[in-house]
Length: 428
Image (cartoon, rainbow, N blue to C red; front, side, top):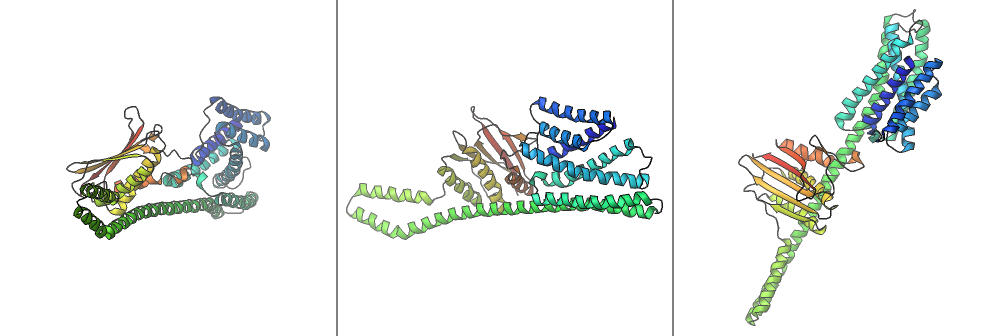
């Protein structure tokens, strides 16, 4: 029976790490999932019948059950299962050694395997759970995001520690009666240090990922700022050109009027008026910073043939700093454009609503399909999930800074799929 329990314990640990650590999802076909469970239990029954734990049987059921249970490329599942078996084997060895040293006194003679093997799996699982909650989930990072060099370093590090402690443990096992509790305390502390060193490497890998994320966010913001600056520069150059030629335009008009060519003069005035429209701000909201951003995205929307409309006006400035306004509206409108451009009838609508105590900004855009929103959180549809979704976090950070609230919903209009983001910012 212990072999079956042993297989089940390993199996559950594998499922936990692969699902929560590598973001792998179970197969939709329940037949494959059932076959995965059956192979694992059959291997346990085989070991129980022959009262042995053949390494080849362990490798076989582990690899096959993982490949059957999860949806992913086959070669990737093979590589993951091999690495996972190796690493969990190291951690289980450490856990077993800790139990044997602390509870048995360094020896295993006369100890029943049935009682100390399963607590070792529990200790290992608690370590994995701790790492997931304190490192991965907290920073929204997954093991699949970590660079290969760090993964290899952790495996090599674990191998070195395991070889060293296997040697030390054998020495303690044969001479445990000679040494006092202080020796076991040193062994226990050094074992904990070995585990800490492995996860210290993991922490370093995560810090590296967070640093890269911050750099990408900064580069994205700088790129957004540069685009808006270039747009404003073009507008400024158009104004200077118009002013430079204004004297000439007035001279032509004066001559046309002197010659009593009234119709020609009207046509020329219309031409000048149309030129002036090109560099005039088409959207005026009452907030100068918001005007720049909305006019810039209007310019981009017209180039992509997206229907871009702004409804409503503000009686005064929002009070949001330019940096924060660019981060907030830039990310919202950029996401809206990326979604709208994929639809048959692309459109974006911005609504500005004032209340006595709050300002509401509602941005709606057409969507190709129903948006995946879970518990008020928008899940990115991009395959490279590790490198996307920062825009939504930045939006949330700005709203939180100004003590506001935001809400996302899938709000179809007249049979068309529409995604809507509503933001409420308190005045002052």
